[in-house]
Length: 254
Image 1 (cartoon, helix red, strand yellow):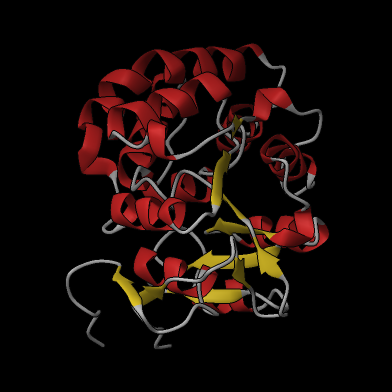
Image 2 (cartoon, rainbow, N blue to C red; image 1 turned 135 degrees about the horizontal axis):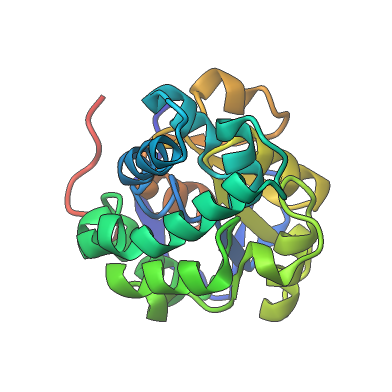
């Protein structure tokens, strides 16, 4: 799918989505959407599971990414979430996260994220993050990647009663931005992300460079498909006139 790589200016605040409604805010998933943490997290999950005496493949670990720690390690270890081994694994994971993942810093950013977020802000789009990470962990990751100041509210798993795909966290994020859900887009890389967006009445925008495959993501009705972060910016700003600024130096080749 080919999308424009230029964002034009508009005399009024906000942009228009596929359905004609003005998009005033964009809420983002973190892992697999803004941050290329999947390889490092997968490796860490395998390591921690091994310490608990459980052999886990990289593919199994990848399938657990995006879930809160309890369900993730419960699935990997084949134990209830309140099992002592699962709780020990969660503690160990959090202990090692800074050394195994955060140490990579700006290297974790997907191409075009910093420029794209800056462009959206410049055109009046409010930004937030809603993630299955704890808020503290998400804040730390955004900080080491150098983009914390580009996004506003960060809503983590610990701030809601019901996690993904329930819409509570994205509705909270939109509320903290002061923008109605139907005037917002949610950008993520999993089917759960897209279902959450649809339930919340947000514009569902999927990136295909994360966990979910094109076919899986496209299976959620109304989802806008993006192969790069530049495409994300173009989709959110699709209704702007042609005059404007470029997002990135070169158009993406197919």
